[in-house]
Image (cartoon, rainbow, N blue to C red; front, side, top):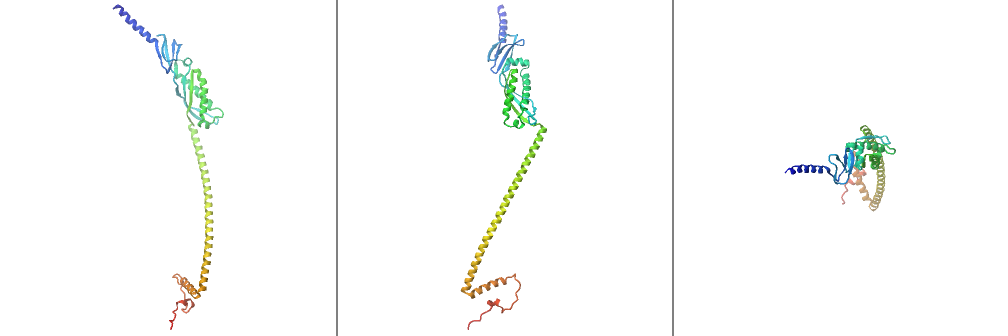
Length: 292
């Protein structure tokens, strides 16, 4: 009974020592074994690992690709048109030993602060270079610019043990004052273009209207000419028929022309005629004496 009393505490202590000396490295992590702040071992492969209890400690770092947003900064391209740029970056810890030596106990927070300073400096450097205009930054061509920013930032971030995987510009806007001036200029340009289009439209409308008027005059003149020709031909045909009728029966022709004269002279709107009933005008109104 006395031996079991000592064996159990020893077993518990041994179990605690064994458990405290074993740790697990996740596949998404890298681990450093530190002894009094000094790096004693690097564990990059997932699985079980060992350390000296109470003397050594384990610090784990994320081995996945991380991302963070930079603060908004103002850049001035070669055309002196200021822009407000907001970017984000994706990075990973490439060298965990160098990372620990560079940032110490600050970890990811300190690393991102320093990486943000690197990125802001490189963004100003690349976007403010010669031949880089604001139109190019605002266009789809800026992908080549972000690649250049990533490359120069990666070279400097290696001193932190970081690998910059990608850099993107989230927003690229004009400052509020410049934005109002730009909008006013754009509005003036659109109004000028609209005025030019209206002027060209009015000019085209005048040409079409003049062509239509000329076509109307020409068509009407041609129609009048054809009508005069037809009318002349009809008058000639009428005169020919009258001549033939007169030649066939002169008395009937005289009677027919008298009826036409009566029709024209005796209309209700004509002035009053005063003449003797024995006049030649009323020859066909006289009664003929019946034959004996």
